[in-house]
Length: 434
Image (cartoon, rainbow, N blue to C red; front, side, top):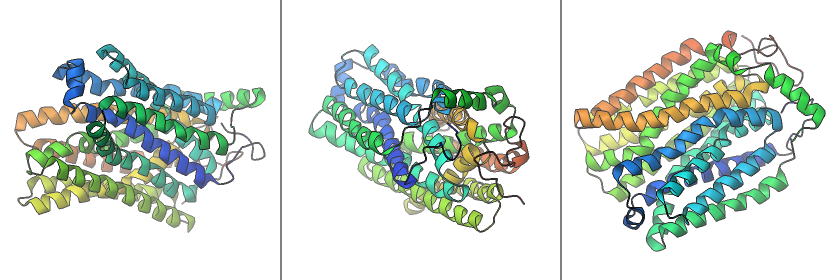
């Protein structure tokens, strides 16, 4: 929601709310990835008599609704604010996670995954809607970098924690506890965040502003397409690492499952740390007069190029060098993380359209998850090793770098009421001009 400066319920300390958003993102990744640990548990498989095809249904069910509901959630937060829609969806996905530990049929399992996917679809649109309203351009890179750490540490922490709970208790207890404990987050969220639920007059004004940027208007912008392509290319690599990196390290590099998890953790910790530092450095450059678009594009292109070093790991003869390039390539991709998100979801996007655009961008991210997992498996089958899957990653990363250079230009940004993006709005700071 966008109001005048005097009406806007800006956070007294936006960094504390940002911490809550990052923790919520971490919880969402723990809840969405907990199923992977359960699917490795013999008791879980025996309980439901799952075939390989049915395991595939379960793994993909989350992405069906997660992708479909991105635009819906973006539309909601653009018109009705962040606090209450997020609270309702958070409670819903935690409840569905807990209920997963109680259900007894495959259909009910799939239903719970569909509910979790639909409810978690609010996380990204709502978070960037809130950050767009509460951080200045010179703060957004660091803010996005800190926020995305939740998404990177979520998979790193969630898998071993879920596995430990299954081994020491049961898969039922794992789902119930992760769902119930997650609900504790709601207390500080409801207490600390000021309500941004609009009045009738504000809602009418917000609807009018939001409707000035339609879905068709967004899709007519090369910047929006450039953001979707970048999100796909970035997501292709990161989802590959979430789904296939442990198998690569075990099957082709001979590591134990325990050690493969350790190096997976290092890779995701690396991208999280680099993303935060790169976002902060870009912010400092912009605050000293650098052009926001050019600065962030430079980091994005450098990150895509740096990530292509994953191919050096594929052809490395020694285990040490393979592990080095494996960790380094994903870590260097961190130059893309915060700056691409800030550029494509905040800097180049009018405030009334942040939620809708973010939902649209997340559709591309969700598509990347499905394509990366399936295409990598087919290429592994065809080639007999992981060189072809990594060549595909290389190709998508190069595409991301070229796409950033060509399509992410201020002149092609979406318009609000036919007003260029870099012309000051009533409550927005103008972007730096060259």
